Amino acid sequence: MFNDLNLKFTHIYVPGFIVIGLGLFIDSLYITQFTSYGQEITNSLVFIVYLWMLFKTSKVTRILMLVGVPIALVGEVTLSIGLGMYTYRLENVPHYVPLGHAVVYASIYYITKEPWVRKHQQVIIKFLYAAMFIYSLLWLILANDVFGFMCMVIAMYLFRRFPDTQLFFLLMFFMVVYLELLGTYFGCWVWPPVWFDIFTWIPSANPPSGIGAAYFLFDASCLLAYKIFNLQKWQRLRRHQGLRRTQASA
Image 1 (tube, rainbow, N blue to C red):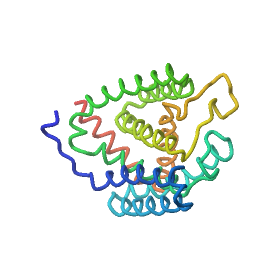
Image 2 (image 1 turned 60 degrees about the vertical axis):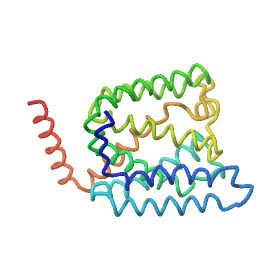
Image 3 (image 1 turned 30 degrees about the vertical axis):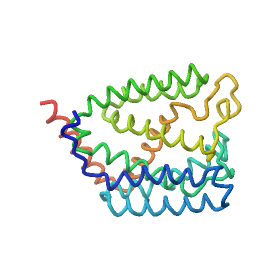
């Protein structure tokens, strides 16, 4: 399976992976012992990678990254500051977070475009399905993560409901696992022990295991914004996708 490993887009998504890990470490509680400007440094690093990806991606991806930032900002302010679903270290919404949403989105998109991933996507999907279920089940058993398990169940339903999105969102699920584990471990943000810190009958881990399901809403919002501002191009894209599905089933 790995003998034919062919990766064409590492220059796009590898910087995204690196800046997420490095940036969260720099914004960590540990680094506050040495400087109070950790968050500002991370903001700058993520912004640089965001600009890099803007220049290296396709026009459609570029538009989605641009509209994704204000969408992510509204979502973060609403969920974190407004509703208290989770809380950032400085009780704000760091500038790198909305930018990071766009970086993650583009990174996963270009991973799905890799020839090797496309060739082996059915095997990858089956493996990630099993890994997702096992991961969330372990968090449910070991950390009483009811909220995270509920999110995972919702994700599985959406995968079945929209099969064309399975590869993208399974990869996104584990990308979110990666950044959530790092972010909470480094103390960049924290999730309350129950859902919204209100619903005591829905306990949650820190982080909830299946919170990657929330990216369905982010993706849908980006696509809706793109559709509104580029209606004719969207219609051509959908016709092209329909033709490809027809050819594939023939």
